[in-house]
Image (cartoon, rainbow, N blue to C red; front, top):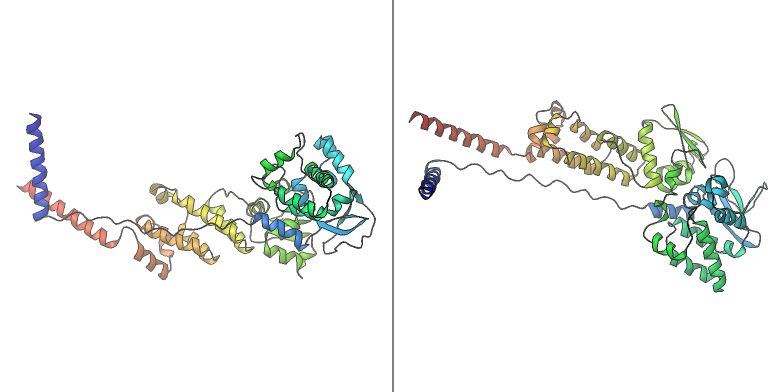
Length: 417
């Protein structure tokens, strides 16, 4: 009985195939949509930005010296405090009660002393406001190697082998080399943890010290060591010129050129919300950002374009693309976000990669976006591109209509018979 049923079913399938091949038309084949443009993220230059800050000598606010050593070493408090509790203690960012580590307190007292005298001839005077703070380095050998030590710190404080090699070139005695290295370890020590060079080599070699708990994010939007204040929407945001200059070329020109901002402490900011500007500063300080949504990402992209921070623009572009790609068709159809408006803003703010991608995105989801009112806001050139690359194509829709018409006619004929 089962064999008989299977035989009848196979015969029916054969008859259908024969009727389709001789009398009917085949269903149209839906082609694949065009591949979307691929955006490549720009590589980070966070470490090199901060490393170059040491050599450009801009926004210097601290000078290290020893009366017996000719060399004067200039640096930036914010960078030093970002990697060391010793410098936090020295510059009064934290108190001994906050640190609660006798070895760090002892290292600070044994190595450094602040000179309060009014004049110091070797220091640069380009910093706005107060002249650089003068710090006496009590250890002559440590002071002679301080330029190499600061270069090590500004590079992320993880290239221990290079530091040891540089110190050996200056100090011939192995005991002196070990003594200086031990002091560097004490400077970079985390409160309450045992200090060990082997641990430094194995742990810190994985990534620079900027990413540890004592990082520049600790100083974001805080008045500690701040030397500039931005005024936005009636509120103030404190910041640090050294970080801004190192990470943003527009601000470097603004603070070091013949502009009003070079000598001002309070700087107004227009055309940007406080939340967007704080996200912008967060990127400059930490090399990362996390917009709350597509709208904020576009606002941040506009801010990045205003200050010409190209990598942040690319991060915002990738965020917007990732968010749109993850939306199902039903959500795309019902969402209030105006994708055409995003396209217009991307073009206006020279975000060529994003604007090209959005055009392809609208064309690929033609049946959804063509029903939205904002579709009419596309320019003639944009509309022509979308119509040319639309998916599904007009040809497919015509073939599908013909096929449905044919199927309907077949059904009607069967009913009459």
